[in-house]
Image (tube, rainbow, N blue to C red; front, side, top):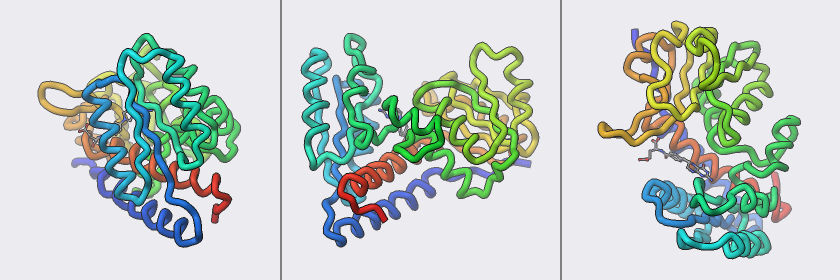
Length: 286
Ligand SMILES: Nc1nc(=O)c2c([nH]1)NC[C@@H]1CN(c3ccc(C(=O)N[C@@H](CCC(=O)O)C(=O)O)cc3)C=[N+]21
């Protein structure tokens, strides 16, 4: 028996089509097309690829591309001044500071300058706090995308055992909070968890966001479980995730591939957040 593949590419396309319709509606109602300011500092090749995709897909959804690029040796004050300029610019609906930033910069201090209502990555303390309290706000793109995939594939969450491997601010922590909001019983584990495979085997829904290639093997998966692989690693034989996909697919009920799983959803949810931010700023929420 082999698991059903969760097609993130197809679901992301559908989300982007809905966003494009939403942009058209916003403009038809007298609003302004959302503007997305991606901020790239330096020239890391992987970051350049991601940012190029975000820009291309935002334009395809009818948004304004307000991309800014700073040299890798820029000082903190200059980077901060750019964020402040974007924060004050009414054409900018959303600001995305591509991470990681060069080591000499304090990325947390830069993120802190992004107004919560333009924080389309959901990474500011205000938006993290709103999520922690279960209140509405802009939510991190990758975990939101995972929730859309789970819903799209009718994965029951109420009362289900969910295990999240990883506790990052970007994915693990908000993922656990989103699953809790949907009444799953959530366990968070990580690289220091004693007998990780044993904890993972409890999961009806297993979300792996540890950043360790091939961390989750077949012995960590309950037969029929839904396995979501958030990891993405460039290896000599192409992209792979945190899950040993071929082996786990023999045990799981449903599984996301890498590539073509969670990755495309991250960008789709960024566009959804940018539209929501623009509507809120323009007072044109539905
Ligand atoms: N402020 C910030 N926000 C982010 O959301 C953010 C970031 N910084 N820094 C880097 C990570 C990584 N990330 C991905 C986005 C799309 C794919 C994606 O589309 N992946 C494709 C493959 C694309 C490829 O070929 O690399 C897929 O999995 O099918 C992957 C990873 C967003 N990140």
